[in-house]
Image 1 (tube, rainbow, N blue to C red):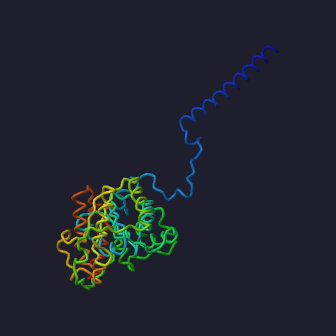
Image 2 (cartoon, helix red, strand yellow; image 1 turned 180 degrees about the vertical axis):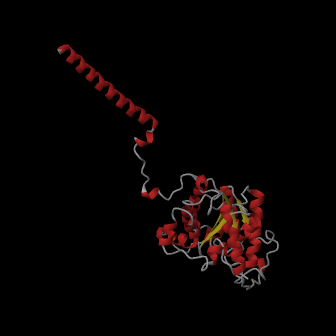
Image 3 (cartoon, one colour; image 1 turned 135 degrees about the vertical axis):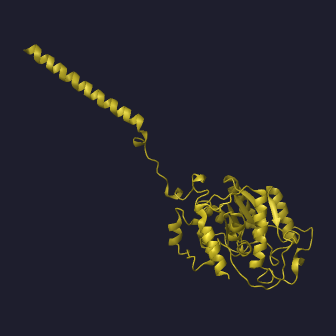
Length: 329
């Protein structure tokens, strides 16, 4: 009888050992098959949430742009993204603010890159020589959001833009519809024509904003694989041949193309009697049409950009083009 009880006890002990071994094996197998459940979760710091980790996430999707033009009021008066859409199907934006200097241009590019991955940066270097304004980060960021908030639509930062009170509806803001372009049909001629571009060997000096922030802009573009083109939209009040000479030197330094549209032979049909809204300081709609066509043709000839016309993700471009044309009639 005692022997029988001993056998039963031994069997129970063996059974318990086998059961523990089986549970242990299941745990080990589960860890190997489903590792994420047992690994420590990576927590994204709050300051990093708005950064784009995978460029392909937004390229070619609704709201994305391939061409970004940054500059001052010459840009928003002279470059019409909707026209370039109609003619070439390229998505673009005029990220421009009054009296924009290179410090503001830097923060404009830096902030836009948190939600966009442009392929080409058209940096209008009329503001190479702008020294007015401020270098305060807070004020620069406010300007970026005020003039470029449409670029944040359909992104994780849109709620942030709305909370800042800078967002306007399409029914109120024609610049929102026109992707940053400022429409004006006023015609106040520059009666002196291209006389402001009288040739000279003199070279304009660069202000401190440019010396400090232009290298930062170029490095940021390089880090994000963005091709840079220097441009200068026609402006008889803020440009001359001394500035042209300096711009040529800077372009050579960075090995980038420079399109100076202030030279009379570049846009041959530009007419200062009909294409300015304020005696040559800014272009009107007629002048902007000529500049935009020239830029679009240049991009088509030199870059392999995607024509998104017919793409369902970009049907709002067709809608906004029609809305724009109706509202300027």
